[in-house]
Length: 85
Image (tube, rainbow, N blue to C red):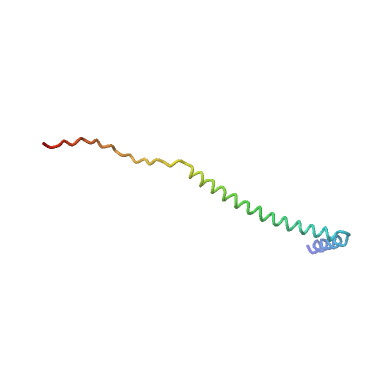
């Protein structure tokens, strides 16, 4: 592992020594930072999608017509009251 690390460091040093190499390394570092930022934003999108699904379900429930209660009222037949004579 140390040999690999040392070889990588040597390669980076050689690139930096080339004309325009430092500029290229700076661009790679900027690219790495931007990719990290994009990764964070994408993870945030997953959370937003979950929230949207939840809200869509709530809206669908609100759009449903209210259910009629099934309380059956028995109709009682009223007999007219007769005035007493």
